[in-house]
Length: 312
Image 1 (tube, one colour):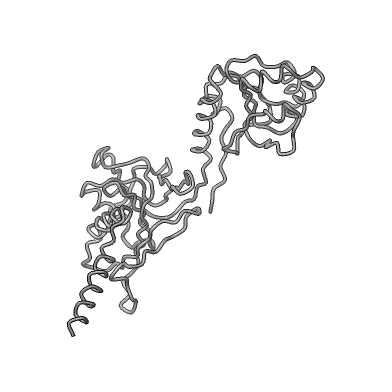
Image 2 (cartoon, one colour):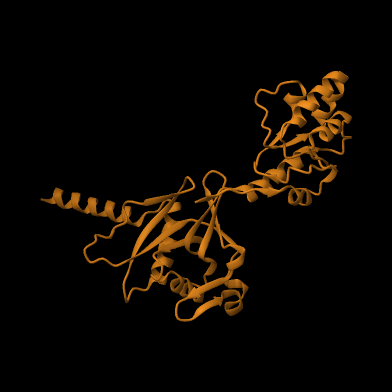
């Protein structure tokens, strides 16, 4: 289930260090991670006005607005401010046009100012909102940093995910989260995993209970967040099942529209799952760099077979 997120307007104002000229009594949150400079709107074009976004006025827009007649300034400021915008930010320390103050009072809108350059405000706002409003999904599993490879371990409850994570931590790897992993889509093809704040650093081991990894193994054993590079799905060993023994075909799982490599590892007594995961992490790193061991063996086998056929 994808979580719908929003940002408190007060949090945005505090992060951006904006000065409040007027604050709305009704608009409390921001739900779009995009921003918009009201240039075309000041020229009277409202056909595609993205009213759900934070609106900005930079030096160019502010200068242009001064050239417009008083009547048109009142009309266009009114048109902009009557839309349910989250807020209007005046950049570069420019004075807030009187027409916008009048319209803000009329429609109960928020006006903010900053001395910062418009491009800096845009960059900071987009970075902040992208991080806070990125699409998020929660997966039941364990996320571990194995030598720089974010490995998400999935499988049925009780199959041993947390126990394997504990073994990996003892071997020098780092825990990101256990039980519930928040997966955030950042950009077009990057997924970041993290633990919810409430259960961060905790690991549940059946028979022992809840342990705090940071307290037991130190801060070097934990990591706040990690890009997800590999999914490992644990499943109970089925003697009738056919498991991949060559690895010629790489399977993927789609999470929030991002394709992540996935492998299935059958679990049975005697298998050292921690070593298997370390090997899988190194293997996926090699694949990202273009090396496939299975393909090399396949090519060698084909070449060997061809030579033997030529000798006959």
